[in-house]
Length: 437
Image (tube, rainbow, N blue to C red; front, side, top):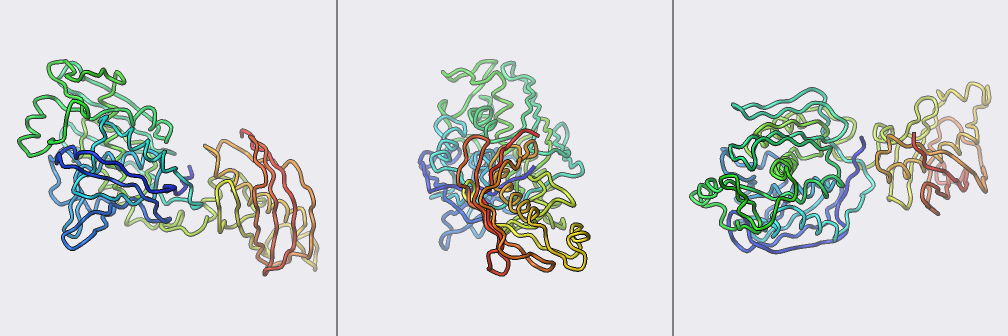
């Protein structure tokens, strides 16, 4: 499954009170360049400090604090899990999160719906590059007593969570979701943080929970919900545990592909799993996809395009503006199979294959903008105004530049040009259709 880098269209902000500190707080979500990741900008003892959302920034001895904390260069921030959950769940890979104090404000509804609404207000935009991601190829697990987490291979991020509380209102609950922005928005983001009443007193004794109210948290005692508002889902409690886990797993530093099964887990165990995954990620030899991509490599292209040898005719995508334009290259080698017969002793790339390569570059643009491209195909349906200005021979590198002229449902029209050494060698208007595979 291909993951594209995404950021925000503009800066958005909100204010409120920190859940644990109880202090007035403001948070702003800001656009960030490709390959930035999720980064907090916070006040430090000697000026602003940037704290990457990576498990390496979790303070040593982080146990039993009932939230996720990050620190760097003398600056410490609490309760980052809900901010990270919203960003990660909605597919944002690059964002600066500006805080004016030690903790983000807790949304008034006690869930991440307000954060999701802010991200919608800002607009989530593709940045035209594949994202580096951590794909789990062999199982990874963490266990501590009756708490366990395991990750096994999967094409997306799937989370199965089991909880078991002695309060009859909660009891045993199990939920499982393939996490996509649509699933996160409707099934996970509405689910509120919760605590047993006896644990609220423990939190207060630890100096935490000062900003908690019955408006922003569910409190349960003796099988009863003390809030005036009813449960949003019968299994809202376990869904909120999934919400927290999504935020904690963002500390791996890149999107995760794998099926995570958690049993009775909390922030401490979540962070330890994230550390195990991050260790494998950091020490792994990553070639495809690159850690900091500046273009689409061949492995990323093959994620969205079904073509294979000998008819995969695009080697790299240099630029891509979703829904607008694309630039790609094809390196022409004497080893191309078509040169055997076209023509012996005078090798020339067939004009029909130049056109096919141009269409494939355009196909990357189309397939990168649809959901689940692995289930789709682009059918070439028409050519107008094709002109071939000069021959293409072995050793040439063709640069294709295509602009989307019209997109109406599954039908599209593109204007394409092909250049070798800056000289126009071919041009055409291409029509195609997106169909189910």
